[in-house]
Length: 225
Image 1 (cartoon, one colour):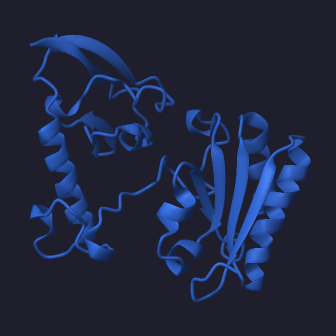
Image 2: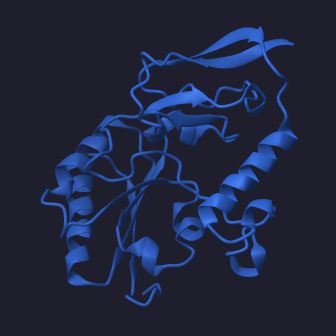
């Protein structure tokens, strides 16, 4: 059938992977450092990937293509969750067997990269976003980090003790160059995490925008203090 479907110009693709993250159907994968449409019937033609591409490598075309197959998409997503989980037999299960009660726990990550040092100053996913700035250790200490903190937010992570940089300058630029709606900081109770909170506070003061700030501190055994 002739239908609207995405086309990826590999010469323009810089391999950032943002389109693959934006595609809810997992129709796009990274192959040899380039984005590629994996199967025509995985693509619903809605184009969530288009605004995520910073180089304009993705466009719509009308061509002969297999019809969108929702059942095939769901089966592929279940397989991918099973592979990520790594549990024996998980590829054949609809639910994630590692989650409590077998509940499905999808990743809430909305963009890539996530490290503050690697993140661009300007990106489409920052526009209108609620921004989460988290210390590296927090996701390991708090079991439901994706559900309770990352859901609905753009996430940036870092460790002021390991990175020999002052995050305040980069975070100030991100706040100034984008329409961020709110800021949440998740840090550990350990003293070195104070550098993360202070960098965000300095960036908020320097950007000149009246943004709300929420700071959550976790104990080393994963409790919210």
